[in-house]
Image (cartoon, rainbow, N blue to C red):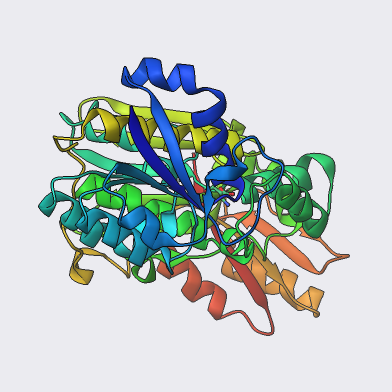
Length: 410
Ligand code: HSE
């Protein structure tokens, strides 16, 4: 029998406990040994559960119990998770976590500590919830040079955008529904401002390109400025608006990474990814595009990935899984990447006549039709192919006018 502990009994933690306890036979079959949840760490009281006797409030109990070989960290946030995980690894305990904030901030350091102590630090659940993505990238795609990754990496925002567009629901009602379903972070600004997706693209970029990418190096824009009108204009132009995390290896050897609302062409498979579902498109030089798709948030899907990592840790108690990247280097990131392509632009001014005139003179060569909305005093269009900097230069020259520019992908 092998003893394990779970740190945290929130949405994901309770899911992990339920899988390990209620589906103990399934886990035993996978491990070929009985797995016993000895402790569950949480400061709150949980009475009336079939496993209420397992709760403890003192982390030192787990740390000092040499019977505990594998620990799940599902508390979320950096503190005290970082301290607890680090000390577990240093004491020779493997750790499985769903904590993307922790991995994006401290991944390189914790991976190194795990290596030095001959234990494993696994975090499949930190990207894409229940979707297997990190292990397939490290193992099945290892014969490839990864050239780029694009994905819908946040279930909450995808759910909100979908509800707004399909059901005409307002932003805050859609957000409360996502919270009720257990998709959103404790502080949902991490979802809607793009920080959660940013942490996930950092982890994917580190996996793909071998160096830690810190969130503060990544251009991050959330969905709070997206209006129902933008969604309608996009629809008219043949696109759907999605929050896309993107990373790419550039010709100069550096990489670019970003999170931004993006117009995705209806022919692109990512355009059909709705609700809480996530999808990650990985491009390898041998495979071409490979897509990973599934539930990106929620108790059961995320707990499934944590439980599988715990099983993997148990199966590899005396060996190391190859999952490694070096510490990061800011110079590795191209921060001023000037994308070339077509962009969605919406210009707006109280002086609608002047707006029309300026649009005609500045964008006279536009090949696609624009949408003129006199009521909202705005004009939306998809630009011809050009550099982003050149379009922004034209837009900033417009008088008494606000503008919004979004990237597109086909
Ligand atoms: N808040 C996250 C999301 C949870 O909505 O995707 C899963 O990481």
